[in-house]
Amino acid sequence: MREIVAANLEWVIEYWPDLVESRMPLTTRPLRQTRTISKEEIVLRDAQAQIERYFRNPLAWGESPAPVDVDILQALLDVIVYADDLAADLGPEVQCPILAPPSLGEMDARPWLSYALARLLELPDEWSEWAWPRVERIYARTAGALAEIYHGQVVKVVCPWCSGRTEEDPVGGAHTWKVEVLPNNQVAIICHGVNCNPPADQVGTWLWGKPCWPITTWEKLAKHVVPEQERAQRARDAIAS
Image (cartoon, rainbow, N blue to C red; front, side, top):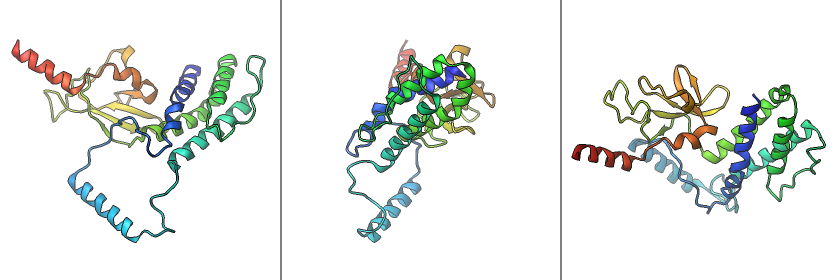
């Protein structure tokens, strides 16, 4: 448990600058996978937007002249409060200097996250068990705001271990990875391919008999993915040879 708690705190610390930057509406955010929507959904979405704009007035909900993304700002404030509470509850120690309450103007939760991480690494294991729900809340709030994840979205890559084989596509090539929110609010990628059996050191865990990669392992997982263009070129080279 200590390793999981530490890994989640380290992930939030690493990606905190990205979350802060994304609060600005004009910031170019990293491209993220979203599910494919049908033509009917596009028509309904556009119609709804037109109706909403037609009936909007200065007092109505809708577009805001606020200079920041309100949803991201709320996520930042939530994590700062959570981190402050966690650091305070873990208590002071010689190796961890006492920190003043965070300033919302600075928008930086990392000092308190780092403090909590250092304390949990030096405290007995039962403290990690106690901190797990609190750290999970911090992690889930950050991941949800930053990744803009949708349950069930398809990741448009071909699994390197099952080659995208499904009952409908027995020869492979299907997109079998889906982003799913698990019962404990953990966000993960699950492969739904037939007989997908990655090596033990390459899979995060197993869920319902399927390989599962929590969001903290996605950076490592991405290194195994071959881009579509490269896959197509490899196929052409194989045919040519």
